[in-house]
Every structure is written in C-alpha cells, then in structure tokens.
Length: 158
Image (cartoon, rainbow, N blue to C red):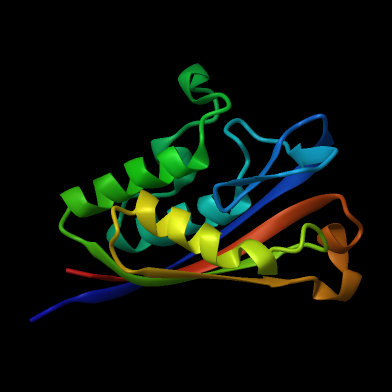
C-alpha cells in the first residue's frame, strides 16, 4: 500500500540592483535580481522546501547552508536536483507540485511552460509541476517592488 505526504514551501528574497533575476530556472532581463547566496530563485527554493519537509529532510537551509562558500551563486535548479536526489534516496517520489510566484514583475505567463519543463527536468522527469502567478493587487513588499516570493505545495508517494 502506498503512503502519501503533502509538503509546503515558501521563499522570499529582496530585489537588489545589478544582480541577475532568475525565476523557475530562467534568467530575465532586469536591472534588479534577487539577493541571495545562490541565484535566489524563489520558485525553485519554495519547491525545494515543499519536497524536503514532508519526508523529514528539513528545509533548503538544512541541505544548503548559506555559510557554505561553495554554494555562492549556484543554480537553484542544481540545488533542486540535489534535494530531490536526497528525497529519492529515502524512498519518496514526486507525484505533482504547484508553485505560485508572487510579484508584479516579471510577467511569467509567456514562459510558464518553459519553467515547468526546466523544473521537471531538475526532478529527473518525475511528476508534474505547475507554475502560476499573482500580483496580490500591489499589496505588501512584493506589491511595492521590494522583493519577490513564491509558495509551493507538493504531493509525494512512497
């Protein structure tokens, strides 16, 4: 008999001048990107937490501490692949995940499918991933253009 677990993940980063903006594994043309130890990809980071938590592997900071100099500027797709390898090693597999990007810009609708393909590829082709977006009608730190955020939910099976 299969066992199922649901995980959630949330991530947020401030916007910073002169830093590349990476979301869902794609780099966007922008004057500002996400401040972070890695590439700051909030979509991938939220998904990482959503797959790690329900199987008892902690969170993104547990596997990839921000004081680890070898991870500076690393692609979050690589972090996602490494996190998912850890999930698979303890006997779990992704069924599906849903990620909501929170921010006014950039508009991700035109590249949503490309993001989903990149995320699933980082997961070794397992499961499905959907990416959606909301602007929160301009409310909060994302509405003021101070940063970007994402929330994710994932269903895993063993």
